[in-house]
Image (cartoon, rainbow, N blue to C red; front, side):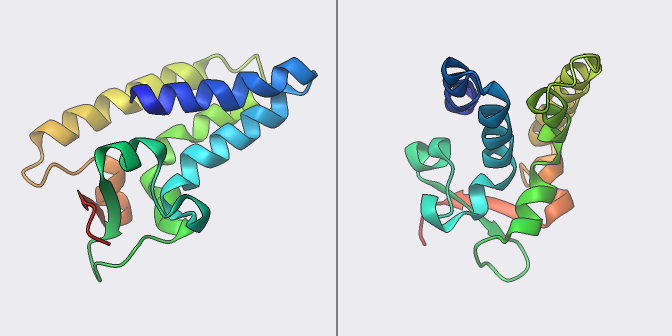
Length: 130
């Protein structure tokens, strides 16, 4: 979570220096949503690289695709409102916060330790063996 927050902040606010913060916001949100399905990142987010974890499809044990990554990370979709400068929708942050709380509860109460997003996308997180 800490690595996610740092990488998001760097992407989002880094472009603000050049007066185009919305570009950084769009890139940051797209990274958050599709980070585990991007070949250029070896199908791992920065946090998963550090922790030596990989997300795979629970059906066929293969790397996840963009659709599964989108489903898995749907809780970050409200952040798109901020990326596009829709400042009157302050509720997007609140919605994301409560979705994260639900995800954490689900993670700790599920016998397979799957997040809600993992169940929705039929994915699991394993120690890096691919």
